[in-house]
Image (cartoon, rainbow, N blue to C red):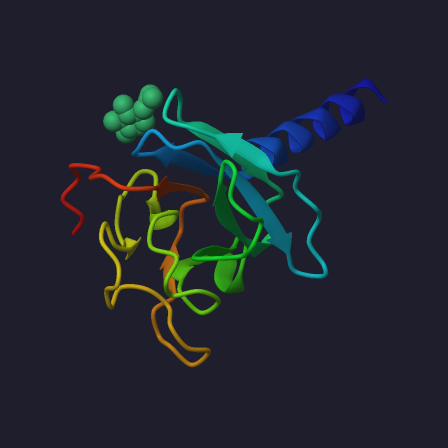
Length: 164
Ligand SMILES: *[C@@H]1O[C@H](CO)[C@@H](O)[C@H](O)[C@H]1NC(C)=O
């Protein structure tokens, strides 16, 4: 009995350590609130307010599917440039992209996404418009990674990173 309890605990902690995340890095001095829109089978995630005082890591269930957009303090809450993700997708991969499909003119909120360790592939751009985003439902811009931790930048500025 004791053995099976600790075996269960090991399984639980292994599952917890695999949980996915996105770290939000604000490049300018604007405060923004991130609003998350889960697909019907994914759980709700509370809005998170972020700024350049710190990089904010949001944890996701390991098969979460959905998107988020950023709203600047004082602005109306309307969806704009999206960060889209499918954690635990086909073959266990993470699918992600920056999508201009809702509002291609939202040029100063969600900017770039990449896997934490490899830092490639990268979706999005430092300056919009660009062709490294998802534009249309049949677009082929969705990126994949075996990693479950992503980064996303917000706002104007440069990461200084040379993405492959
Ligand atoms: C956020 O992370 C980036 C990349 O590691 C780093 O350059 C930047 O200084 C961090 N920002 C803060 C406020 O810690």
